[in-house]
Length: 226
Ligand SMILES: Nc1nc2c(ncn2[C@@H]2O[C@H](COP(=O)(O)OP(=O)(O)OP(=O)(O)O)[C@@H](O)[C@H]2O)c(=O)[nH]1
Image (cartoon, rainbow, N blue to C red):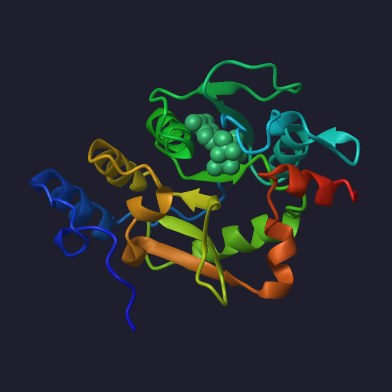
């Protein structure tokens, strides 16, 4: 069965003229945007409410999750920024970008960075302790091969179809779609970019452990082998 459309009148959202215009612009985007990605964005502005402690400070193998993630991403891009709701001590050389719009979760951080740079951005959540260089490299290679209209290159779990929106490359052409969705009250990234504008790379059940993320105290216990 075909996936349900996530944008437009078919899914109950109002398709405004502005939305249609943005969509057409994205679909006809001529600049394919190949070449090295310069900007990396580590998302670190969450509330960690389920974990009950600041997940950026969780230490794993001698490093905080924030330091580990920023250091990993730094190996693949020119400049890494840390995305937060307010200025924090990131414990490293990475500049902080504070969200222009609050209370919309990771979308706020991504929108703020896309507005600032107008360049493709490699987005990585800070709570992925087993993330690897190979995953970043494979996503970058996949971006080079994407259909030219796609504004997002991201990972998808083979068996369930689950989309990993926070290990992903957002093109500048994604910005109007994100802004439009947010203005309509949609904050979940999975609903902001329609499937036809998304280029996905499949990962298997065996690779799932690489995408393990720390959300709950039980995840932390698992991470620390308790
Ligand atoms: N810049 C920014 N990053 C965010 C925001 N909300 C979440 N993130 C980051 O996005 C990633 C995924 O966050 P979630 O696990 O969904 O949310 P969380 O706030 O960390 O945790 P919960 O409060 O338990 O939902 C993490 O790296 C967060 O730090 C936000 O409002 N702004």
